[in-house]
Amino acid sequence: MAQIIVVTSGKGGVGKTTSSAAIATGLALKGHKTVVIDFDIGLRNLDLIMGCERRVVYDFVNVINGEANLNQALIKDKRCDKLFVLPASQTRDKDALTKEGVGKVLEDLSKDFDYILCDSPAGIETGAMMALYFADTAIVTTNPEVSSVRDSDRILGMLQSRSRRAEQSLEPVKEFLLLTRYAPNRVKTGEMLSVEDVKEILAIPLLGVIPESQSVLKASNSGVPVIVDQQSDAGQAYSDAVARLLGDEVPLRFVNEEKKGILKRIFGS
Amino acid sequence: MSLLDYFKSSKKSNTAATAKERLQIIVAHQRSQRGDPDYLPMMKQEIIEVIRKYVHVEEEQVSVAMDQNDDNLSVLELNITLPDR
Image (cartoon, rainbow over the protein chains, first blue to last red):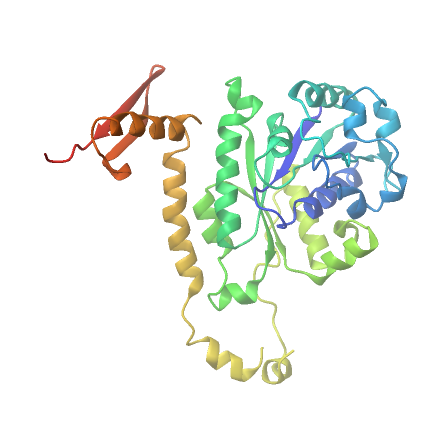
């Protein structure tokens, strides 16, 4: 049985797809057979971040409607043979995802994968609700910024009332906070919420802190998940998050301001 | 950041603290409504309209709250302040 993980946030543009791509790749690189599914029907983008956009033939909705089978729709990653992508459809049909249809696909995938990552769309419409409904674990991606934190709290409410686990009174969905676009220097000057602030407000365990990093844009430009770039701070921070997801205890990195040399301090960077 | 910015920034007010305070209030409010059924706001609106057929009341004079007691018992509490005649 696979573990189903939803990467969600409520607010858009906080890094759900970047995080889904990075964490799925990280899990696969550690030897776990992983599939990452794009739930953003009509606005497919995970394929671009994963660098497989030109290999999309069939998609998630085709599989749900029985127009293609899973083997036809799953795209095997170029870099890692344990990693597969199930792209979203570009249809504008809002009712393309049904609970029965999604449930059936997840059940079939469960048979031969270790991890199923669901990359949720923003908002609280059908796509987002379908992405979180079947989850065992939720990674709530949040920026240290008021609207993102508030929306994350709304999503936590949904996980606690609208998920399959809540409806069937099973053990609740495991919730984790992934704080992204963190700028330690701005935290230090009091212009950004700190890790502790966000943790205190949302009151869920921390999976990781991803620093604001130029490597994220570089990675998406070239269609390579940022975790592959192990020279970068963001890539290393995602690796730490994956290790924690697998149960390891790893100390937090990149949460304190990097030390600048005396010359940089005086003349600026 | 240059040396000049360093002195300037130390005088700036701490906006993160303001953000935290505002968030704590709004999140507490959000959580108090977490268990509420979806139909509650619409039901409240309809109740207000029914009352308005007979008495003029403002929206803030009507409070509707759903309380979840233990043992599968929910209590719908309706509080209407009627205006003086």
